[in-house]
Image 1 (tube, rainbow, N blue to C red):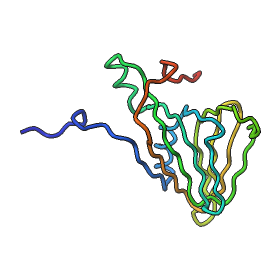
Image 2: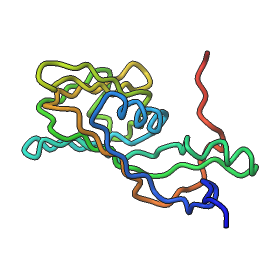
Image 3: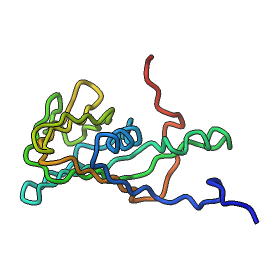
Length: 158
């Protein structure tokens, strides 16, 4: 009998929660380069919830795809921020219903008593700023992975 190996596990959808800056760093890395139409952003003030339906590049599968010489993948994921008190944006034309956004990073600035500000940095100098009562994010894959349309992994100038 041998020990179980990571490679033996059946791959499943991600379901992660961030409540600390360290947790947030993991989710930020996983959603980097996710794209979404502006129409897939929801702000529910009464529920104090802000959500995005992302087409997320599967960074966690990149090395396996390269080793197997198979196409890179994306997956649709919902990123939900709870306990949101206020939402503001800059550099985004919210009237352009055809606008596609690219998420670059998530940044946390703590405030008093666990409250703080979460900034979603977008390509093209856009940003969404959330004032939150506490750091509480959920990332859930909601579809099966699909072939990345571009056929390439996202790249950034160094």
